[in-house]
Length: 434
Image: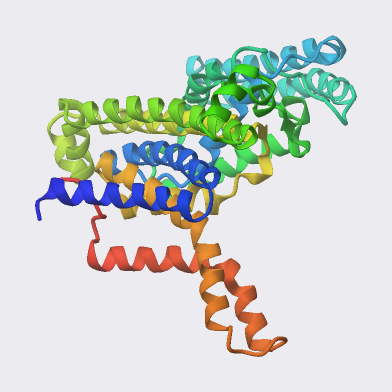
């Protein structure tokens, strides 16, 4: 079997699984799996840029996805005038003062000669600047968070169209990646993994505790949509007449139409990113990145700036993850910082890349769809299997109850089994890179 036929068959199998879900369960479920599969494929592409192209072991994917979700709030939610009037100016002034302290400390370090005087000046700038920053910033934060904390308690956003949040999510994640990369990309791979994981947890801690920014653990609900609301379609006589004429129930048809609208938008983004990733992979830059990945010492000997190239691809991959994070928050319609867990937004994305085939963009896309489908469907499928197996057992049997309660753990067991099988029989993934 040729490689192209095999790859086409794998994508056809995933498509068949999603379509089969529509027939066996419901089309709403199938479209939800499709939408999240599209977003997961974009996240996999972002991680594949870092690991598959350059060999960067980033386990902080969760943090960049969360920053993308934050961008959806900051861009699309309307501002809260009362909060801005109460303490918005103090918050901005505090942030600017904090940035000025860091810049001043950096200038003192670079322009003064090494010695005790430089250390003393830096201590004065940092310690004095910290207390000045907290004095201004804390007053503003307290005033903002006291403004109707049950409903708002934060500054709000810019009130712009939510689609603008997607590229802004990429820019926000890219900016964070630049800062992280400057500090951590010189580390060895295992230390880089620890550093990125720790920084991702710091990002989440900030999002959970800084209520003035995005309400913290109180969450932000009701984000604007790029597609119509179901109730608006149901109240549209033209839409009702069209779907009724086709024999569909207006309520079901409105839900399917909204999900199809999301799927179309997400598919456009995925195709654009996939095309750009393929162009990058086959360009001289892509060949250079693979050369650096395979042998950094040889690449340095040929005059390549390895650290700079690592920073480039780290920023690009993080930006793609940030875009996906903004898309996912848009689909959910809410921003929940506590929902960003390493198991879902780091481990699962790594499984997608490894199973699909690291270094191959189409493999990353395949892994995103396949692993997300299994992540969603394994638990109900496992419950059905266990119900069938335990059917002969009497009601109230301790063994039967234990097995049925264990169905919730089937998805974790399945992910482990899939990883073992792929690493044993296809260690380079289903669609391996060259």
